[in-house]
Length: 191
Image (cartoon, rainbow, N blue to C red):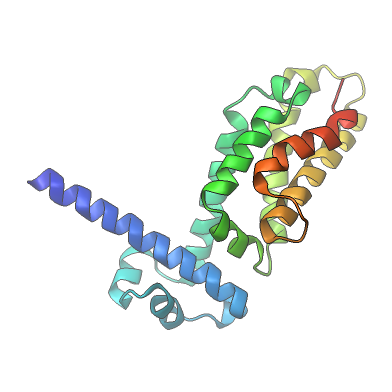
């Protein structure tokens, strides 16, 4: 019986945290983060104040958790595949990123539509750069500076396309993203 109760509490905790994070992201589309109160968040999430404070000390901690969770998931997507393989054929990685974004596309659309997202996108770019530059292919590349420029171009282009797809500013669906990005980046992939 104790095990069932713990599982129910765990599910309830996950649900509450998800409601709080979604409420904050939604509110950030309506007004600047600095003007969002805990009252705004709990009303939007349809929870009580005590539930909020059981999980977070303030709205800044919620925002930090959203950022940290998304960065962690993106890093896992990268490091689940060997970088040398991905540098030659990015399709498997792009398919993982597409799946990651598709699973909660409305949530990521809200998140990417908020102000101040550029810092978050730069952090993702840094994760990607480190991932690729730590590969054997990168370490043995004859012209590291040129490789860094190419990687910067490829990562920025792919991130920009995903960003535009998720927020709906280009006429491409997520399920076609990996194929499209691969076809566009093929000439720029390291040899």
